[in-house]
Length: 271
Image 1 (cartoon, rainbow, N blue to C red):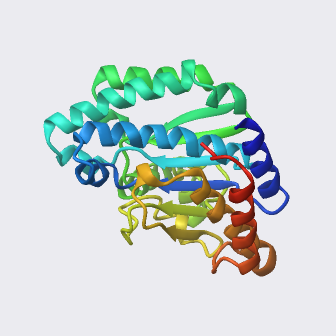
Image 2: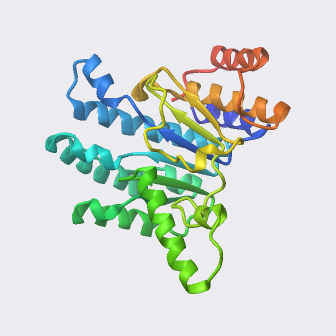
């Protein structure tokens, strides 16, 4: 299995690779309902999918991944579901940071971005610990948006920008606002993926994704169904269009589809 991942990663790294990828991991609840599971089981499967996809991303050379783990709007859901999501986040993030191979193997620095003042103290403590444990990692970044909305991020950035301008008397423009976003330490967003067949951005990285250099890809599969080969197809498509057209937008080329099919036929399942 490791050999397969390295082979796929080597193929994708032979061409352009998006430095920063954002993911709206949508569809956990619908997956649970479709399979007659409890909602919490759908969310649990979603976190498992996240770990697999992130590992493949970093193997392929992605420098930064930003995942939409919990929206500020999600606090409007039932108290039971919100409480379960908090406990799941504590458990899975601790597992990834302390016991999993993701951060250790790929040198991933975890950053929690969002309005953490809205969280319970016990949840916030786990998130702070995850950042502390990985703070010296320098090879890659994982931004976990929890809890987050783009409107809140932009409002926070504007507040910081105005405060700085009052002190320095420097003019305010789009660059100063960009420099005060939660993602200011990261490369520009070049690829945004949303699963579940829903064609909207749900208040996620709205400032970052307006660049003409950012490709937005909508996938019909629910997040727990989104597998490594789905990611491979998207990355190869992005690479082809970046190489030939200078950006990651456009349709996948026929020979790119043939490469994917050939890899899938000749290799065991990529998990």
